[in-house]
Image (cartoon, rainbow over all chains, first blue to last red; front, side):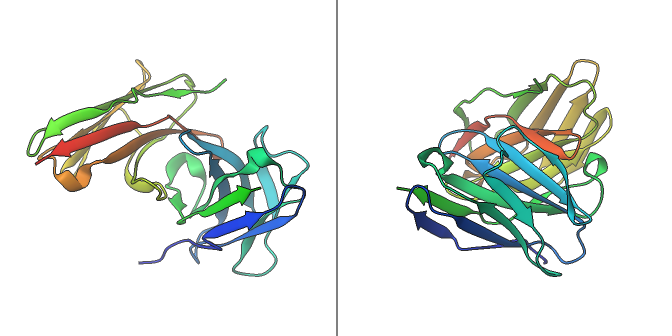
Length: 115
Length: 109
């Protein structure tokens, strides 16, 4: 069964460093998403992406964050200058069609630890 | 502020019993709702989606939606110890999913 994959599974970085989290969405899906979950808290929406541009972003997704689809399979989240509070699980998700009547499938996540 | 509210639990049921999980949401514009299961340290796994008022059944799971009351529920019949997890309710808001904090279910054998 097709699934969303993410690399790395765990990333440790120093505060102020840039990190890139990578995702390979399900191959026939057209919408891609990033969510994060701080330990013990709810899953929070960051950004949605369709047709090579951002569809929607949350207040969390400030200028430190960017997304890109560098090729036909990968979808990346870049955090330019990490802060301690960026430590969280980051989940990539994808869906086949418009979110209102479809299902989003999540990848296994990347645990980001900022020291 | 669009919100999804869930009782955090824990909800404890014996093996074979029915577990009932509930969720309310604030955005009357939400059309679609989803139940995800999340094991500790893992990612959300989709269990059920529901788009219209009424019940939707899939195996041991039944989702119920009442848009007038802004209420979503999930029933798990014949609960198994492997069902022990946190259940996340999510509502669609544009392209985003808005998640509740989740209800922790514990099924004892």
